[in-house]
Length: 443
Ligand code: AMP
Image 1: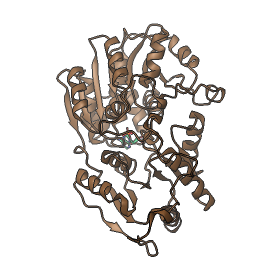
Image 2: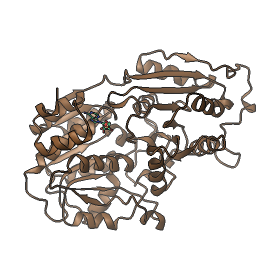
Image 3: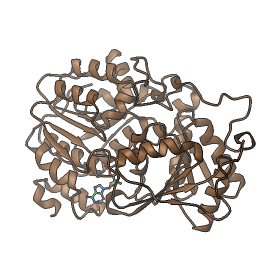
């Protein structure tokens, strides 16, 4: 099948061809014709399936012939959980819409609001936003919703996990009743289904990979190792196998920093990316990683959400996630769009329970390996293994209010206060003048 059979207009086909895409991915093959007919969609799809083009291409086509937006009005709204994902979705909108006379903009917290207000002034065809900042802009009368024709909730499960349900409901109440709704989520919990029921009208349900399954093109391996020797083993694996572009997940922001520092000391270039870093620092770290300036990017789950790094070859779970579904999200970073990938988990004896939970969820037993010289010693006292421990002055586990270490198990923060991930607490000069302002662009 080729893109030309999906009913897309020439300027969109040209943009797709320019990206070098030859065949639509399964979600694109199903979503594009359906969105073009104007119907609602509920899609189970992880990052890496091509879902962004799956909703962006038909959305742009539906907007291309209509009336221009009035001042401060928007015609399509895409809500995403994190600033990184918002920025990446808008990049896709700009890429796929480059031959169309449509304007797009992105707004998120953590950066100055004024450039965003300016970008909205003339009206915008497609606005990509995180919920908190969108409501701030609405309250300041910088954005109006009366011309919204299409709403996309991207990574809806993550938005609920991050406590955005109240903000989402507030936004929904402000939108015109008559509109097209597209809901994308990697997993479908009861809460998501409830949201979908109130939102979608006779939706087409699309499921491209079975729920909570992992991508077949990803090789998954577990390395058993003692707690205190994970950094050493990781450094060895990276160097012995000549891995480039390794995304490493840690459970805490502190752990991410410490690991990046240790790898650097060991001669492996590394940067950490997490919610405590300024937007400028996060953008720089990602850019360095993408351009192969640093070999390893160490990230927490929330910070890594939505990172669009093409064909990322290696994903490492330095620690297993507390929530099994996060394992599926994490390894979805590799083996994307037809490429093969390698997902490695460094597992200490204490993490056995977490590993079993993951294996139950993905319905697979993961192959275990031991690297010579790194065999875990069942009798090794944990007190000797301080390698992965934070220094005594820092708390071992930051409270969840930090916005990281969230959980799907019902303990997630459910507040309608601006989430730290929205960064509304960060309005420093550095950020306000940061390169990644989240302003508008027309194309
Ligand atoms: P997404 O799931 O939207 O995050 O997309 C994952 C990656 O796949 C992105 O880097 C896209 O550029 C790429 N991609 C999307 N559609 C296609 C396609 N039909 N063929 C090849 N690559 C694609």
